[in-house]
Image 1 (cartoon, rainbow, N blue to C red):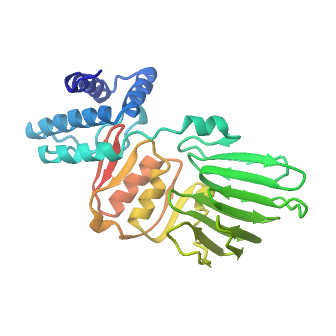
Image 2 (image 1 turned 60 degrees about the horizontal axis):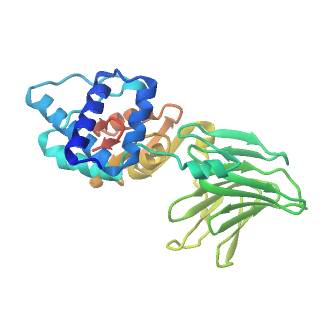
Image 3 (image 1 turned 60 degrees about the vertical axis):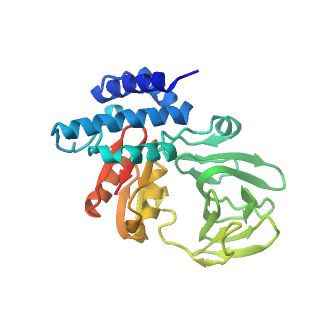
Length: 312
């Protein structure tokens, strides 16, 4: 069993190697696995990082921010003070490297890696787009077509076949269409369905249903109203490789970017949560998008390697 002292020593060894940028690809993978294995590993790593940053600051070290940090050897964007150590431990509890559910991926028919959306034409001619870190199961029969959204988000252009309606199933939500284009986003507490073209019938687990036409959307969940409202015109901007926001709250923009990064994004200053953001950000380079967002919003961005990006 690992003692606190042995965990600290192991964390210090990993942090020193990562800070020098001398990790091989195999070592980098082992570090990610070590961090993902136990929250105590992330706590120890964050503790060592906090102490190192504090020592650097106490000695007066103040290196300029890098224009772009290579993914293989990321370094902190801003240094932490001694007072930040408890905060780093809190961040480590809620953050850490994102690990894809292996069992879900193995049981799915199609899945996407973090930051790597995929597009596939199905046997019936429908075009399915999976956003980052998503997974689906697909079942085609003579009478219907089922796509179960196990996690994440999809957009689908449905091939017309009146004899075989297509159902997208997400938890207790059933979105049925014959020939149309719509998006489905399965969240932790609610599922979003938005229609770009045609008609989609959305049915909740309790049997209540609503019919959506082009330009409409609905949220389905235990704690949300089942109201059909006007569709957010940027709901499918991710299918074009960008995050488009028009006066969207900062916290929601960060949540979108968070999907594309292996580390989590943590917003510390809740006073900025509702700051309206209007921007078009490239999802192919979420690191750059996050830096641009922080700079244009006059926010500070701190990077705890392999644990979190902290926005304040």
